Each structure stands twice: as C-alpha cells, then as structure tokens.
Length: 310
View 1 (cartoon, rainbow, N blue to C red):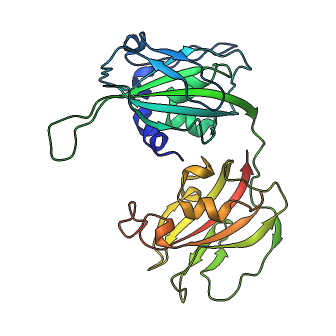
View 2: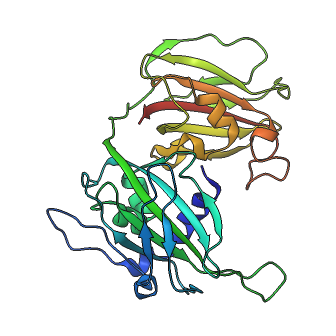
C-alpha cells in the first residue's frame, strides 16, 4: 500500500475512543471527529480525474489530535457498509502546503468497509460510510518529535477522494479446488484435525527467488494486484520454523489491499485464483529484511488460503 496510508490507520485508531458511537439511522451519514473547526478554512478544488485537487487552507495547520472531516460530499452513489470504496489521496505538509505524497496519478486503492475496518479504525469507517462517490474527506495528523530531539515535525494534511464504490463478493469459508503435489525440497505442509495448515521447515533451504506454489488450485477469479483479498494464513520463519503470525489463531479471516503488503505477498499472490491454498517462500529482501518486524525476520514461509477477492 502507499507509504502514507500505512501510517494513517494507526493514527486513526487514536480517534476511536473520542469519536463516539453514532446513533442508529436508516441512512448513515459520514461522521467527522477531532478538532474539526481547524479544517474549516480548507477548500478543495477539482483538477480532473487523474490530477490531485488543489488545496487552500490557513497555514500553518496545527492539530493536537488526529482529525477527520467530510469537506465536500459527492454526487454519486452513497457508500454503504460492506462495500468496497476506491480512494485516491494527496498528502501535504501542514506548515507550508508542500506535497508529500500523491496517488492520483498512480490510481486509486480499494478499502473494504468490513467489520475488520470498523473494529480497527472506527473513525475511518464512519467517515467513509454514508459519504457519496466524489466526496472529499480531510484527515489531519499531529506532528511528532524526531528521535533524540525535542523538535516536532509539522502536522500533515491528507485529503481523500472517493472515486468509486462497488459491492463486495462473498468470501469462501475454506479453500476449494484441486489438490496439487508440490516439488521436493520445499517446506512441508500438513493439515491438523481442525483443518489448520502446519508448516515444517526441516530440510528446506534459503530461496534464491520468490516461490509461490499452489497446494490447492482454486477455480475462482484470478487475483489482481489492485484487489482487496480475504484470506486465512499462517507464517513462520524459514530458519527455525517459529510461527510469528496466524489468522487461524485469532479465529477470523484477514482482509487487505494486495498492493499494500510486503512485496512477497503482492508478487506471489497476484495471478493466483480464489479458492487456492498457496505456499509462499519469501526471500528476506521481499519481506522485512534481516531487521524484521516483530518475530518475522529473514526469509519467511507462509501458507495463504485465498477466500475472496474484490
């Protein structure tokens, strides 16, 4: 996923407690939260489908808490819970308005408005649900102190545009398709009595390149890099075989934009089919490197069940 949006979701989590729970309504509307008045000066001008909008606002913009606001609503279909909204965004420095990131030229990215997003980032969910296609939604995030200094960076302003919306397809409960016998030398995968894949790395060697081996070949739609996937997965380190993550252990599937994860997943799952179970053996340069992320270090091994793609 685009670099900035990967940082936005944790920021929006800070708002969940103060955003409140909106009253039930037959037709939900986009919800704003935070220091909304500080975005009153913001004006967004349309520059065309593939150009970022112009932004005018009183500078410097300085917020002390993450803030989100519907600036202008669209004229298209209203976004509903359970759908997939495609969004493009521009991010600027709140001090001088300098552009930090612009995804309008590279194309929108999908955000599935599912229970996972609602639980993890209720404010983002509430801002998107009820808005209409074409809406501009502003998100301001406070500056942070640089490591080892007392100086703080300036606040950042991000403006999302909802470019389209579509219904999500129902995900499978488990992989469905034809069993495939993998070649020798790969990590071995067996299924326990609960149907959960168990990975053994005994005898497996470091990969020279990415390996994406079907264990079950699904018969559903072909996965594209721009899809939002619903999956079950388990991941272990190639060296030692320690499990570091598993959606099975959490008891719920995961949904994510395929272009917003590590390169080994993006490259390895694009072109696969819904219903497939895929063994990924990922070199460290397509994962988190030697430094790792948490316990996920070096070369990694995943088994991924592709249950849905939107």
